[in-house]
Amino acid sequence: MEHPNLDSPLEVACAWSAIVEPGDEAAGLLRKSMGSALALEWLLSQPNPAKLPRNLTHDSDGRVRPWTQALNRWIPRVQELDVQRDLAQLEAVNGHVLYPEHPDWPTKLDDLNEGAPAALWVRGQLKQAPSVAIVGARASSNAGNNLARDVAFELAQRGISIISGGAFGIDAAAHKGALAAGHTVAVMAGGVSNLYPKSHIDLFDQILESGAIIAESPPSWRPARWRFLSRNRLIAALADASVVVEASPRSGALATIRHARELNRPVGAFPGPVTSHMSRGCHQMIRQGVTLVTSSEDVLELSSEIGDALFELPKEENKGLPAELVRVYDAMPARGFAAVDSIARVAGLGKAEVEAALATLILKGYVECQADEFKRVR
Image 1 (cartoon, rainbow, N blue to C red):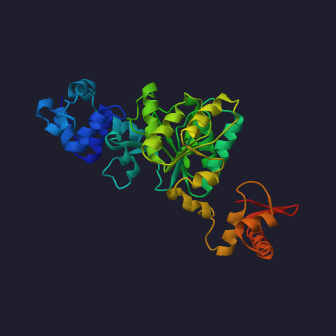
Image 2 (image 1 turned 180 degrees about the vertical axis):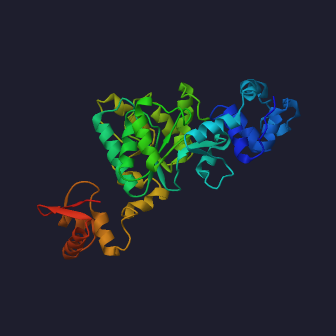
């Protein structure tokens, strides 16, 4: 079968994305060793594994690689390949494609090595910003949802992009919290014109107003069960740090944390009641060495990539403020009221200095006062 117009890096990447399942390391090895274009040319022209270089036909231990099985997976997709159809479907939802040669390609994905995606199908806009993945149970508690929403909101206020999977429960709560203050990315298990769950269409529309929805499969592909597990590695790779809010011991959210650990990315878990089944997965992770976190500040401290935001006001709001005001503001809790003595102790400043700074912050609209206690309002 002829496959015209597969000469550009974009079209080659789209072709590979349509031929192989997410995370297919055999395809990744082929692309990495030969280059995506040459590897595709080989695949489209009656491929013969015997003609591959020895470093591809045999692994480092001298064992023959199972290329026949790989070709049996790929050839049926090659016969149905239609890159222009896929691109037209993407254009219909105002999407675009990123690929490794593209200047906006998120290079953190390259840490997946042979498991890296060939392409990203994108609706909305990805940001080049520090990012945190917040994942957890679908059947989450109200307390878990509130925690995920609040943490996402506080991180987004500081310019952190929130990555999650768009699912029920913790994912949705994290997206909603981020939307109230900043940027969020939903990573789909199916294509970006076949969004799941369908009942989240309003949430997805809100995400597209300021964030992004992405997938590594062509637009129309369905969110099959096995693709959710592959999707988790993408969430982990896109984020500078990953945290789990609630999860049972068998929760798929824990796979995201495991993938992040394999990538040597910092990970955290929020503890919960010992009697709650939805806390057992988090407690299991903590026993295995995952950092216990209880606040957005704890999450920020996980990684130097995101930790600088711990000492900043929300990025759009700190312009022109003197350093002493930023210091007092940052010494205040992210939520709730605090007395002057408490703020002074955290800031390491005298009470009179703090009182003067708070008066200025109130005038500028950053802080409010009730009953001699002070609270952030931005």
